[in-house]
Length: 115
Image 1: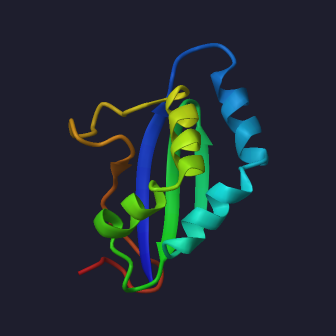
Image 2 (image 1 turned 90 degrees about the vertical axis):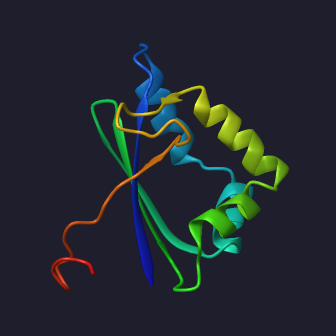
């Protein structure tokens, strides 16, 4: 199993946080099916203030650069992404080509530091 940590911010606008949370209480079924269809087995999003942290798990053969774009081939995934981007903004640490910024894993309870 592979795991991924990513972060993004929510725009500084009244109501954005609650609206974002409301959408995630009822994620569109096609979005969930699409994520599972490309090999993502678990996804959790955490919130602190306006900062989001996403934790994903996927099969060992999952490749984020190869497989996540396949998810975005779906019209509904594109609609969801477009909608969510109205609430989100890259974090200052993100590279120019990143929306959700990848995070470095520095500890695992089961195995200490990753290789």
